[in-house]
Length: 90
Image (tube, rainbow, N blue to C red):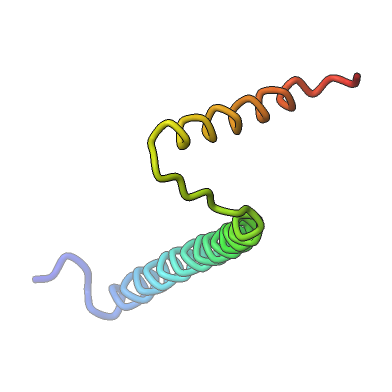
């Protein structure tokens, strides 16, 4: 003999299906929100990368034949950046 008669168990089975479908809908809503956030952040990163690429194209690459010239150009570049990092008004 079953724990519940079949005529009374029907409403519990229906309730279990309703809870299951509700959980699936909540899961899909959370995943859609997460996908939307990731898509927005990916677009922002793509815009940022395009902006850096445009800025990098403005620079003229220096081709040095000896390592001393390469080190001198790197030292000159780092000195220029250090002068602007203070942020103070002169």
